[in-house]
Length: 375
Image (cartoon, rainbow, N blue to C red; front, top):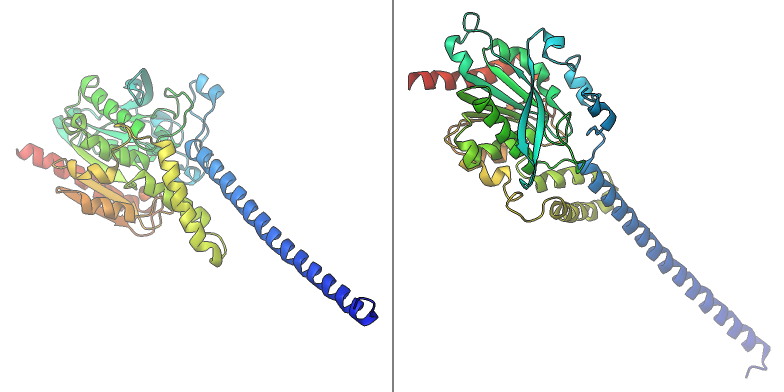
Protein backbone atom coordinates (compact mmCIF):
# COMPACT_ATOMS: atom_id res chain seq x y z
CA UNK A 1 0.00 0.00 0.00
CA UNK A 2 2.72 2.47 1.07
CA UNK A 3 4.79 1.54 -1.91
CA UNK A 4 2.37 3.54 -3.99
CA UNK A 5 3.82 7.05 -4.35
CA UNK A 6 0.48 8.97 -4.48
CA UNK A 7 -0.67 7.26 -1.31
CA UNK A 8 2.59 8.09 0.48
CA UNK A 9 2.26 11.71 -0.51
CA UNK A 10 -1.33 11.92 0.70
CA UNK A 11 -0.39 10.28 3.99
CA UNK A 12 2.50 12.66 4.61
CA UNK A 13 0.31 15.63 3.67
CA UNK A 14 -2.41 14.51 6.08
CA UNK A 15 0.14 13.95 8.86
CA UNK A 16 1.66 17.37 8.29
CA UNK A 17 -1.78 19.03 8.24
CA UNK A 18 -2.86 17.34 11.49
CA UNK A 19 0.45 18.17 13.18
CA UNK A 20 0.26 21.79 12.07
CA UNK A 21 -3.35 22.03 13.21
CA UNK A 22 -2.49 20.54 16.59
CA UNK A 23 0.37 22.99 16.97
CA UNK A 24 -1.91 25.90 16.14
CA UNK A 25 -4.53 24.72 18.64
CA UNK A 26 -1.85 24.26 21.30
CA UNK A 27 -0.43 27.70 20.59
CA UNK A 28 -3.92 29.21 20.68
CA UNK A 29 -4.79 27.75 24.07
CA UNK A 30 -1.32 28.51 25.39
CA UNK A 31 -1.72 32.14 24.40
CA UNK A 32 -5.11 32.25 26.13
CA UNK A 33 -3.62 30.70 29.26
CA UNK A 34 -0.69 33.13 29.27
CA UNK A 35 -3.07 36.02 28.67
CA UNK A 36 -5.33 35.01 31.54
CA UNK A 37 -2.33 34.44 33.79
CA UNK A 38 -1.00 37.88 32.89
CA UNK A 39 -4.42 39.44 33.53
CA UNK A 40 -4.66 37.74 36.94
CA UNK A 41 -1.13 38.86 37.82
CA UNK A 42 -2.00 42.40 36.76
CA UNK A 43 -5.15 42.53 38.90
CA UNK A 44 -3.39 40.97 41.90
CA UNK A 45 -0.56 43.49 41.60
CA UNK A 46 -3.03 46.32 41.16
CA UNK A 47 -4.97 45.11 44.19
CA UNK A 48 -1.80 45.06 46.28
CA UNK A 49 -0.99 48.58 45.10
CA UNK A 50 -4.48 49.80 46.02
CA UNK A 51 -4.18 48.14 49.44
CA UNK A 52 -1.06 50.19 50.03
CA UNK A 53 -2.46 53.39 48.57
CA UNK A 54 -5.63 53.18 50.70
CA UNK A 55 -3.64 53.44 53.90
CA UNK A 56 -0.94 55.73 52.53
CA UNK A 57 -2.32 57.61 49.48
CA UNK A 58 -0.19 60.28 47.83
CA UNK A 59 -2.16 63.07 49.50
CA UNK A 60 -1.48 61.55 52.96
CA UNK A 61 1.77 63.32 53.79
CA UNK A 62 4.01 61.40 56.18
CA UNK A 63 7.16 63.41 56.59
CA UNK A 64 9.14 62.68 59.75
CA UNK A 65 11.58 65.52 59.14
CA UNK A 66 8.77 68.06 58.70
CA UNK A 67 6.89 66.78 61.74
CA UNK A 68 10.05 67.01 63.85
CA UNK A 69 10.29 70.73 63.13
CA UNK A 70 6.72 71.34 64.30
CA UNK A 71 5.72 72.63 60.87
CA UNK A 72 2.68 71.29 59.06
CA UNK A 73 3.50 69.48 55.79
CA UNK A 74 3.06 70.93 52.33
CA UNK A 75 -0.52 70.66 51.03
CA UNK A 76 -0.85 68.44 47.98
CA UNK A 77 -3.43 67.23 45.48
CA UNK A 78 -6.83 68.79 44.88
CA UNK A 79 -6.70 70.52 48.26
CA UNK A 80 -4.36 73.13 46.77
CA UNK A 81 -7.23 74.50 44.69
CA UNK A 82 -9.76 74.26 47.52
CA UNK A 83 -7.64 75.88 50.23
CA UNK A 84 -6.33 78.73 48.11
CA UNK A 85 -4.00 80.90 50.18
CA UNK A 86 -5.47 79.72 53.49
CA UNK A 87 -2.69 77.28 54.32
CA UNK A 88 -0.91 78.76 57.33
CA UNK A 89 -2.75 79.47 60.59
CA UNK A 90 -5.60 81.70 61.84
CA UNK A 91 -3.30 84.58 62.71
CA UNK A 92 -1.30 84.58 59.48
CA UNK A 93 -4.29 84.07 57.19
CA UNK A 94 -6.99 86.09 58.97
CA UNK A 95 -5.38 88.03 61.82
CA UNK A 96 -7.26 85.98 64.44
CA UNK A 97 -5.72 85.18 67.79
CA UNK A 98 -5.31 81.49 68.56
CA UNK A 99 -3.42 79.17 70.87
CA UNK A 100 -1.69 75.86 70.22
CA UNK A 101 -3.32 73.01 72.10
CA UNK A 102 -2.54 69.38 72.76
CA UNK A 103 -5.54 67.09 73.14
CA UNK A 104 -5.05 63.71 74.84
CA UNK A 105 -6.56 60.81 72.96
CA UNK A 106 -6.14 57.04 72.83
CA UNK A 107 -4.96 54.65 70.17
CA UNK A 108 -7.57 52.55 68.42
CA UNK A 109 -7.61 49.72 70.92
CA UNK A 110 -7.03 52.00 73.90
CA UNK A 111 -3.71 50.34 74.68
CA UNK A 112 -1.66 53.53 74.83
CA UNK A 113 -2.20 57.30 75.00
CA UNK A 114 -1.52 59.65 72.11
CA UNK A 115 -1.60 63.38 71.49
CA UNK A 116 -3.56 65.43 68.98
CA UNK A 117 -1.96 68.72 67.93
CA UNK A 118 -4.32 71.56 67.20
CA UNK A 119 -5.46 75.17 67.44
CA UNK A 120 -8.02 76.79 69.68
CA UNK A 121 -9.51 80.01 68.35
CA UNK A 122 -11.31 81.70 71.28
CA UNK A 123 -14.65 83.42 70.59
CA UNK A 124 -15.00 87.17 70.37
CA UNK A 125 -15.49 88.84 73.76
CA UNK A 126 -19.15 89.34 74.76
CA UNK A 127 -19.05 93.09 74.05
CA UNK A 128 -18.16 92.45 70.41
CA UNK A 129 -19.84 89.10 69.98
CA UNK A 130 -23.13 89.02 68.02
CA UNK A 131 -24.31 86.23 70.28
CA UNK A 132 -23.56 88.08 73.52
CA UNK A 133 -22.73 86.32 76.74
CA UNK A 134 -23.68 82.91 75.36
CA UNK A 135 -20.66 83.07 73.02
CA UNK A 136 -18.25 82.04 75.75
CA UNK A 137 -20.18 78.82 76.19
CA UNK A 138 -20.36 77.54 72.58
CA UNK A 139 -17.65 75.79 70.56
CA UNK A 140 -17.46 74.08 67.18
CA UNK A 141 -15.07 71.13 66.83
CA UNK A 142 -13.82 70.97 63.22
CA UNK A 143 -12.75 67.54 61.94
CA UNK A 144 -10.80 67.18 58.68
CA UNK A 145 -10.90 64.26 56.26
CA UNK A 146 -8.52 61.41 55.52
CA UNK A 147 -5.07 62.47 54.41
CA UNK A 148 -5.54 66.14 55.32
CA UNK A 149 -4.94 68.12 58.49
CA UNK A 150 -6.50 70.91 60.58
CA UNK A 151 -6.03 73.43 57.73
CA UNK A 152 -8.92 71.78 55.85
CA UNK A 153 -11.24 74.09 57.81
CA UNK A 154 -9.13 77.25 57.81
CA UNK A 155 -11.23 78.83 55.06
CA UNK A 156 -14.33 78.26 57.21
CA UNK A 157 -12.86 79.94 60.29
CA UNK A 158 -13.69 83.63 59.55
CA UNK A 159 -17.44 83.05 59.08
CA UNK A 160 -17.76 80.76 62.11
CA UNK A 161 -15.68 83.03 64.32
CA UNK A 162 -17.56 86.16 63.23
CA UNK A 163 -20.79 84.38 64.18
CA UNK A 164 -19.52 84.20 67.76
CA UNK A 165 -18.24 80.64 68.16
CA UNK A 166 -15.05 79.34 69.68
CA UNK A 167 -13.28 76.87 67.39
CA UNK A 168 -11.16 73.78 67.98
CA UNK A 169 -9.21 72.41 65.00
CA UNK A 170 -6.96 69.37 65.50
CA UNK A 171 -4.94 66.96 63.40
CA UNK A 172 -6.31 63.45 63.68
CA UNK A 173 -3.95 60.60 64.57
CA UNK A 174 -1.61 59.72 61.70
CA UNK A 175 -2.07 63.23 60.30
CA UNK A 176 -0.33 66.57 60.59
CA UNK A 177 1.65 66.94 63.79
CA UNK A 178 -0.35 64.47 65.89
CA UNK A 179 0.87 61.12 67.19
CA UNK A 180 1.55 58.61 64.46
CA UNK A 181 2.90 55.07 64.23
CA UNK A 182 2.79 55.14 60.42
CA UNK A 183 0.10 52.47 60.23
CA UNK A 184 -1.86 54.75 57.91
CA UNK A 185 -5.43 55.97 57.76
CA UNK A 186 -8.35 54.11 59.30
CA UNK A 187 -11.42 55.73 57.70
CA UNK A 188 -13.54 55.90 60.82
CA UNK A 189 -12.78 53.88 63.95
CA UNK A 190 -9.59 55.65 65.05
CA UNK A 191 -10.96 59.02 63.95
CA UNK A 192 -14.12 58.51 66.02
CA UNK A 193 -12.02 58.17 69.16
CA UNK A 194 -10.27 61.44 68.27
CA UNK A 195 -13.60 63.26 67.79
CA UNK A 196 -14.73 62.16 71.25
CA UNK A 197 -11.38 63.29 72.70
CA UNK A 198 -11.71 66.74 71.10
CA UNK A 199 -15.25 67.18 72.39
CA UNK A 200 -14.17 66.18 75.88
CA UNK A 201 -11.25 68.63 75.72
CA UNK A 202 -13.53 71.46 74.58
CA UNK A 203 -15.76 70.92 77.61
CA UNK A 204 -13.33 69.92 80.34
CA UNK A 205 -10.19 71.90 79.45
CA UNK A 206 -11.58 74.87 77.54
CA UNK A 207 -14.76 75.31 79.58
CA UNK A 208 -17.39 75.24 76.82
CA UNK A 209 -20.89 74.19 77.79
CA UNK A 210 -22.22 73.55 74.27
CA UNK A 211 -20.21 71.76 71.59
CA UNK A 212 -21.15 71.12 67.97
CA UNK A 213 -19.08 68.91 65.66
CA UNK A 214 -18.52 69.77 62.01
CA UNK A 215 -16.69 67.17 59.95
CA UNK A 216 -15.88 66.60 56.30
CA UNK A 217 -15.50 63.29 54.45
CA UNK A 218 -13.96 60.78 56.89
CA UNK A 219 -14.28 63.46 59.58
CA UNK A 220 -18.01 63.66 58.84
CA UNK A 221 -18.43 59.89 59.08
CA UNK A 222 -16.50 59.89 62.36
CA UNK A 223 -18.66 62.74 63.70
CA UNK A 224 -21.83 60.72 63.04
CA UNK A 225 -20.46 57.61 64.73
CA UNK A 226 -19.16 59.69 67.66
CA UNK A 227 -22.56 61.34 68.18
CA UNK A 228 -24.19 57.88 68.27
CA UNK A 229 -21.65 56.67 70.85
CA UNK A 230 -22.84 56.89 74.50
CA UNK A 231 -19.99 59.28 75.36
CA UNK A 232 -20.76 61.50 72.40
CA UNK A 233 -24.48 61.32 72.91
CA UNK A 234 -24.01 62.98 76.27
CA UNK A 235 -21.55 65.65 75.13
CA UNK A 236 -22.29 66.59 71.49
CA UNK A 237 -25.05 69.14 70.88
CA UNK A 238 -25.20 69.14 67.07
CA UNK A 239 -23.53 67.53 64.04
CA UNK A 240 -22.83 69.00 60.61
CA UNK A 241 -21.63 66.22 58.30
CA UNK A 242 -20.19 67.31 54.95
CA UNK A 243 -19.70 64.64 52.25
CA UNK A 244 -19.89 61.63 54.59
CA UNK A 245 -19.78 58.03 53.36
CA UNK A 246 -22.40 55.65 54.71
CA UNK A 247 -20.05 52.66 54.99
CA UNK A 248 -16.36 52.04 54.49
CA UNK A 249 -16.97 48.97 52.36
CA UNK A 250 -19.25 50.86 50.00
CA UNK A 251 -16.73 53.69 49.76
CA UNK A 252 -14.01 51.21 48.84
CA UNK A 253 -16.30 49.61 46.27
CA UNK A 254 -17.10 52.98 44.67
CA UNK A 255 -13.43 53.92 44.46
CA UNK A 256 -12.44 50.56 43.01
CA UNK A 257 -15.30 50.59 40.54
CA UNK A 258 -14.18 54.01 39.34
CA UNK A 259 -10.68 52.58 38.80
CA UNK A 260 -11.72 49.33 37.12
CA UNK A 261 -14.64 50.89 35.29
CA UNK A 262 -12.23 52.34 32.73
CA UNK A 263 -11.83 49.05 30.90
CA UNK A 264 -13.17 47.88 27.53
CA UNK A 265 -16.90 47.31 27.48
CA UNK A 266 -16.56 43.53 27.16
CA UNK A 267 -14.52 43.37 30.37
CA UNK A 268 -16.79 45.71 32.34
CA UNK A 269 -18.85 42.91 34.02
CA UNK A 270 -15.63 41.14 35.06
CA UNK A 271 -14.17 44.40 36.38
CA UNK A 272 -17.31 45.12 38.39
CA UNK A 273 -17.22 41.68 40.00
CA UNK A 274 -13.53 42.03 40.71
CA UNK A 275 -14.08 45.43 42.33
CA UNK A 276 -16.79 44.00 44.59
CA UNK A 277 -14.60 41.03 45.57
CA UNK A 278 -11.57 43.22 46.20
CA UNK A 279 -13.64 45.65 48.27
CA UNK A 280 -14.81 42.77 50.47
CA UNK A 281 -11.31 41.33 50.90
CA UNK A 282 -9.91 44.80 51.44
CA UNK A 283 -12.53 45.60 54.06
CA UNK A 284 -11.67 42.46 56.02
CA UNK A 285 -7.98 43.27 55.70
CA UNK A 286 -8.36 46.83 56.95
CA UNK A 287 -11.17 46.33 59.41
CA UNK A 288 -11.01 43.04 61.31
CA UNK A 289 -14.12 41.88 63.10
CA UNK A 290 -13.77 43.58 66.46
CA UNK A 291 -15.99 45.98 68.42
CA UNK A 292 -13.80 48.88 67.33
CA UNK A 293 -14.64 48.33 63.66
CA UNK A 294 -18.29 47.29 63.64
CA UNK A 295 -19.84 50.76 63.86
CA UNK A 296 -20.40 52.33 60.45
CA UNK A 297 -22.36 55.54 59.87
CA UNK A 298 -25.32 53.80 58.23
CA UNK A 299 -25.57 51.32 61.11
CA UNK A 300 -25.66 53.92 63.88
CA UNK A 301 -27.03 57.14 62.33
CA UNK A 302 -30.51 56.46 63.76
CA UNK A 303 -28.97 56.59 67.24
CA UNK A 304 -27.77 60.17 66.73
CA UNK A 305 -31.26 61.51 67.51
CA UNK A 306 -32.27 63.61 69.38
CA UNK A 307 -29.00 65.38 68.53
CA UNK A 308 -29.76 67.64 65.51
CA UNK A 309 -28.04 66.41 62.34
CA UNK A 310 -27.38 68.38 59.16
CA UNK A 311 -25.97 66.40 56.22
CA UNK A 312 -24.40 68.35 53.35
CA UNK A 313 -23.17 67.00 50.02
CA UNK A 314 -22.41 68.10 46.45
CA UNK A 315 -23.64 66.48 43.27
CA UNK A 316 -20.19 66.99 41.73
CA UNK A 317 -18.49 64.81 44.34
CA UNK A 318 -16.49 62.13 42.50
CA UNK A 319 -14.80 60.76 45.64
CA UNK A 320 -17.87 60.04 47.75
CA UNK A 321 -20.97 60.13 45.52
CA UNK A 322 -23.83 62.11 47.04
CA UNK A 323 -26.12 59.07 47.26
CA UNK A 324 -24.15 58.21 50.42
CA UNK A 325 -25.69 61.23 52.15
CA UNK A 326 -29.12 60.41 50.78
CA UNK A 327 -28.90 56.94 52.30
CA UNK A 328 -27.75 58.36 55.64
CA UNK A 329 -30.52 60.94 55.69
CA UNK A 330 -33.15 58.28 54.98
CA UNK A 331 -31.86 56.14 57.86
CA UNK A 332 -31.53 59.03 60.35
CA UNK A 333 -34.29 60.13 62.71
CA UNK A 334 -35.57 63.61 63.42
CA UNK A 335 -34.31 66.24 63.98
CA UNK A 336 -32.43 66.04 60.70
CA UNK A 337 -31.87 68.04 57.53
CA UNK A 338 -30.27 67.39 54.14
CA UNK A 339 -28.68 69.98 51.86
CA UNK A 340 -27.58 68.82 48.40
CA UNK A 341 -25.52 71.45 46.56
CA UNK A 342 -25.65 71.28 42.78
CA UNK A 343 -22.20 70.87 41.23
CA UNK A 344 -20.20 71.11 44.47
CA UNK A 345 -17.15 68.85 44.60
CA UNK A 346 -15.77 66.77 47.44
CA UNK A 347 -15.20 68.79 50.64
CA UNK A 348 -15.69 72.01 48.65
CA UNK A 349 -19.21 73.12 49.53
CA UNK A 350 -18.06 76.52 50.77
CA UNK A 351 -16.02 77.00 47.58
CA UNK A 352 -19.11 76.52 45.43
CA UNK A 353 -21.26 79.12 47.17
CA UNK A 354 -19.88 80.71 50.33
CA UNK A 355 -22.96 82.91 50.82
CA UNK A 356 -25.35 79.96 50.73
CA UNK A 357 -22.98 78.02 52.99
CA UNK A 358 -23.06 80.76 55.62
CA UNK A 359 -26.85 81.05 55.46
CA UNK A 360 -27.46 77.32 55.71
CA UNK A 361 -24.80 76.30 58.23
CA UNK A 362 -25.00 79.34 60.49
CA UNK A 363 -28.79 79.27 60.25
CA UNK A 364 -28.78 75.66 61.43
CA UNK A 365 -26.51 76.45 64.40
CA UNK A 366 -28.33 79.66 65.35
CA UNK A 367 -31.68 77.89 65.32
CA UNK A 368 -30.30 75.45 67.87
CA UNK A 369 -29.19 78.34 70.06
CA UNK A 370 -32.62 79.95 69.89
CA UNK A 371 -34.29 76.70 70.88
CA UNK A 372 -31.98 76.27 73.86
CA UNK A 373 -32.48 79.84 75.03
CA UNK A 374 -36.24 79.31 74.86
CA UNK A 375 -36.08 76.18 77.03
